[in-house]
Image (tube, rainbow, N blue to C red; front, side, top):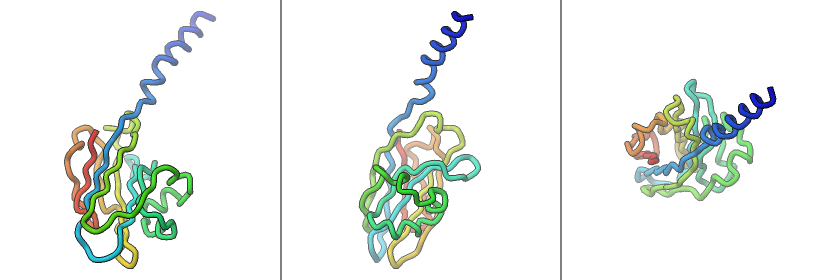
Length: 156
């Protein structure tokens, strides 16, 4: 019995790192040219039923404007832990935001979706400005935005 338990423990220890592996994914969000202030963006993951799962990046330093990123704000609950270490400055008209994040391999090709909410101070809010499946085949292919985002690409 002890040998069986030892074998199971060793097998689990060997398999577990493979399940927890993550890969760097570069997210590039190109904004349209528009009049106004810099855009606030929330880039996040949802599961196959559209439920919020994880914040990947938030741009914009004034946290009072985060509530305008409505779908992300509702899903994340605007908890400070959701933006710790994954936030930066807002993005100006016609400019691009390029960040690299780690995404668990188990989430790729598993029904997850990357979404981008956008908002501009004194401008329109665009929940789910971009929605694109997180798949290996989708990597490198631009998704078109419905609001301030011209295009969004992720590369693995």
